[in-house]
Image (cartoon, rainbow, N blue to C red; front, side, top):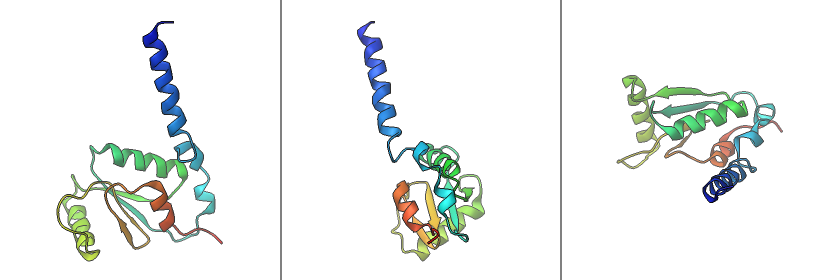
Length: 124
């Protein structure tokens, strides 16, 4: 085998090892079974945002019920998001997407999965 081919295989192996560990999508499929009723999750996204796509795929795979609004194509949702940012005293300036509203908490700048999960209500 050529060195370049070995290097590509090594890179794929490293990628899979990192993304399929405990934080990977495949390991989180059973979240839905543990959720209490009444969770409210809203994701404010951009249609072109790769981070939004990743969060959407994770929540769908994990079975987390959520609504998604695309603020770059829906002016009313952009105004709604701006109101939430002001109400939660988020400083002005650029705010990264996705912005996720979980049970009354506003999580900005592509919050990590653990932060989203901490805000969810689980069965006792």
